[in-house]
Structures are given as structure tokens and as C-alpha cells.
Image (cartoon, rainbow over all chains, first blue to last red; front, side, top):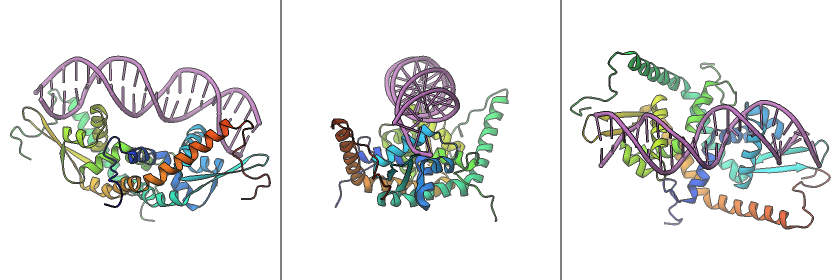
Length: 141
Length: 141
DNA sequence: CCGGATCCGATTCGATACTG
DNA sequence: CAGTATCGAATCGGATCCGG
């Protein structure tokens, strides 16, 4: 094989530390927000609605450290700082964008699944004899 | 438009609650682990190395609630429980698998970026006159 | 003995206040 | 404006215990 066999399922594999950073809702939203071009700190905070300044700053620093975003600060008054995806970061746009689109496209199925699941839970609780969630006694399927 | 304009960047959009679940390292690894077919609880715990029983159980319950995995319990002794991806869950395999492959394929670039970043940080701290990370005084780039 | 529930410490999150 | 500091609140995660 050309490259060492990196495997995110192996606890000690370095690739898992990278997966841990990118498989994160804030990372996904920030990369999606930056996909149309660089944004200033405040613009990012407004675009990724609901993110706090602290978490935005922390996440951006992690992404900068991993070489996914570049931080460009101008010595002006008032301060102006822009963030943009690096070449490496742009390769992340497709997978993370796909994840965001999945969430948007399948949310109705997910909401319906949640409703069904929660209703069945309620039924169990309300029933005098709580029925087990287990299947048949003979193990069929 | 056919569907409402779901948008994960909007704080109150339900699709964000779904993104928050799937943009998670444990979810990603579990879906990747289940992509080859159903696994028992203990097999999953062994495959997704380093995950604790509690976190595995919690994450599986969330995924079951969102309709992404199906839980199949047999009344046997000792207990046997299998988890497998639903049809909906199988549509997640590609985006999450892509994320895992990104982590594995780009880990070397990420590690190198981290090294550079951390070294520059050290330099700053060690330098008598801490140089600002800011760019030029004229705002050029 | 397996699946997973409980307990509890560690980490992260987020609102507010403050600085260059 | 773009952060950092601080501090409760909420969440995560590991060790341990329990029902079948």
C-alpha cells in the first residue's frame, strides 16, 4: 500500500483526532458559511446563527491550527479580521456540505421517526404492564 | 419551491437538530462500522475502539430515535442485541464515510499544519518582543 | 455473562463583562 | 470590532453496578 493504513476506528490512530474536529456541528456550519468566500469575524457570527463569540473564536483557532482556515488580520482601527478556507479547507467543503444537505433533505423523515419513537415510549410508560421492547421469545425476526 | 427552505445555518431550523446529531465523531464511526452489516452491541464496542458502553448506548438510542439505526433484541440468555442501519441510515453512509476518508487521507497535512502552528506560537512566546500575529500595517495582503 | 442504567467527575458551553 | 477572562450551567464520558 502507498500510505500507512490510517483507520479512524483505531483508537490511537492520529486520523481520529482530525475526525473529532471536523465531525462537529460548529465546524460543519463554519466551513459551509465560508464556502462562498472569506468572511469577517462578525459576519461569521451572524451567518452561523446562534454561535457564541467564544465558541466561534475557539473553533476558528482549532481550524486554523489544523490548516483548514486562514486568519488574515489587518492593522486597522477598528480591527478587521477575515477568515477564509485554505486549499485544504476547500477539500472539506464537499463532504461537510453533503452532511448539511443531508440534514436539510432528510429532516422530515427524522422528525417523523422521532415522533414515532417518542410515542411508543409514552405508550410503554402509560401501559399498566410495561411491555418489553424485546422481540419474539423464539428469536425469530 | 417544493420543500420549505430548510437551512442549517438558521438557529431555529429543525434541520440543525439533525445536523448536531450526525456531525459527531461517535455517530460517524458507528455508521461507518455498521456499513458492512448488522453488529451486536459488544461487537460495535470492539469495532469503534475506545468508545465506552455508556456513550455507545446513548448514541445508539439517539440514532434509533432519529430512524437511522434499528435495534433488534432477542430474548435469549445471555442477551443478544443487534443494530443495523435503516434505509435512511444507509443514505448517511456515503457522507459520513467521506468524512472518515477525508480524515484518513489528509491527516498528514493536518499534522504538519499543527506542527507549524504550534512552533510559531512557541516562537512568539520565546521572543523578547512578542511580535503580533497581525499582518502588514498598510492592510495589504 | 451481556447489554445498558446509574452515578459522578471532567470537559465543554455560553452569557456577561472587560481590553486593545 | 475582535477577541479574552471568568464563571455557572449543561453536556460528555468513564467506572461501577444491575437485571435477565
